[in-house]
Amino acid sequence: MRIIIGLVFVVIIGSLASAFFYLMRDKGTTSRTVNALTVRIGLSIALFLFVLFAHHMGWIESTGIHQVTR
Image (cartoon, rainbow, N blue to C red):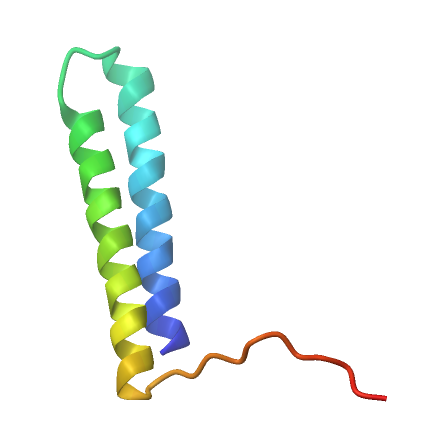
């Protein structure tokens, strides 16, 4: 599960980097920056929903904040 979430996170960062690249290179003449940011937002929402679904199915568990007992 960590690998899937980590890979999607890397793809999200890659999409953000490509949007920055297109922003610097195209100077606003094309819509590639908007498309890259749209992909990033879609992947972020999909990842969030997947994490919620995985928690609901019991594939991952929330650990909460651990308190030190004395």
